[in-house]
Length: 325
Image (cartoon, rainbow, N blue to C red; front, side, top):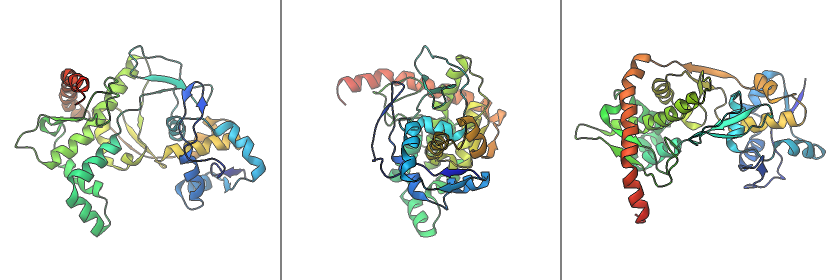
């Protein structure tokens, strides 16, 4: 069997920042979190399934690990952990999609960070779902599951209710720090379920912005891999599939930042010869939701409504920013 490590040792401090290929690097706190998780977490279980033996690093092994694993953005680690290959060096003249160095020198990382969709949903839950949070506390169920059940009863497009999910500015369909979150199109006929679904649909519309621009760049997109906490919602994955027209696949390990960091560590100590080899052994896909093309056709008008609302609001956002409102 090949020995493997779980991630970085304690000599790295939370918040340590470095530079990789001229881009601002992320923190290493996520790597340290995986180190302390120890046997029994999902990543260790994944390693065991591949025939690798997880173990702690000896102090003399730290330098060879550090030379490879420091300095990558959280996104780069997440892409590695999801086993996403970005095939060639391409630039977006509009600036919506960024091109960065990839952890694998043979690849490039093309990305748009997108909206803080999980944080948007958490904000909505915290502010407008006290009943669901109370039920969750009493029953052990997730408040998000209760909200998802409410949203599932609402038709695609939320009957004209649109959210611009710019609660921390916009990164799609354009970069705009002045943009603000906006609910538009609601009437007395709309209920809380409509607002919940609008939150889920808003992030899917932003993904569609990025997907469409990547296609304009000539990138052959075949699927979306959903990662992070929001990927646990099958409804949300289905909405993204229906809005974009692409299958949405769920990896076994949804927290791919930590998994990607561990894969980099494995390559760094020679357990694998390349990231591609590591991904082939470690990454597992557990479910794919296919787009419903009839629903996608219905979403087309609502997606265009989202874009029209965004661009119509730009003068308002600018005026508010100029006046410091």
